[in-house]
Length: 347
Ligand code: GLY
Image (tube, rainbow, N blue to C red):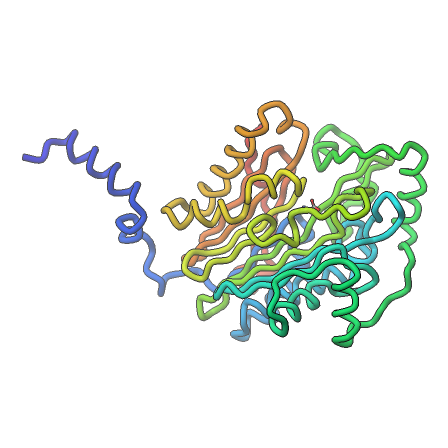
């Protein structure tokens, strides 16, 4: 006979199994799509570029490339050629892209090319490789018609770099500073999330975008100039498939922003997607990945920021960060989208 207790035990067992759990999931036809989600407040403008592709029924891969290109074209301190340089004064760009069929491409440490995301896509579509770095990536880009831009810092980056050179101290502090009441240099109202503070300290935000199109195909892109004033040659999580971005056409997609070293150590976005594969919602998956990060960094985690965003094939969205201050933008209708503040481990 089934007692109430055995029924409850059975129910708990059932929802812990992914194939069983999928019985309770929304039918695919009820999925929210198209949908596009990006990191930070600046994700709203980026989502708008993706939406132009998604709304008329375009491919999610084209949408996430367009979103990354839109922010790469801006003179922003953390993405693209306007970004802060490494400690030797060179702007080096990292980007990757992935579709629902595990096709992926990536460039790292790329200099003087305006759209690293499009070079990453070229790597994916025209080479037998996944990742090209540095000089080789630049050669490949130029050979494929990308213009070699002037070797010059933006006015903002030059000023920040000169300021940084006074102490030459490597101190990644992420958006925690903003929480501590420091004044963002980039005034509210500008399209991009603040990442440079009046006192000269800095922060950064990688642009990660994940999308599902009207046909249910998921894709993602990730683009950044990396940590400001990093060591020459340093590569973060953003161009690394499974760290800064992961997409699985049977499950969903995830991307990250924050201190890349910590995300690489964890295999962060692959972990998020695997949690979803095993039945977690995107929100649960991002939270579990952050909890793992904190567990392996019990002493350091309060002092760095990492945030994950994820979507599944039902069009459910999740986000979670280690510390407060990680925002993300969701666009799933023709209403301009909305920015949310992610929940965080440390409140
Ligand atoms: N998440 C970007 C970086 O660490 O470079």
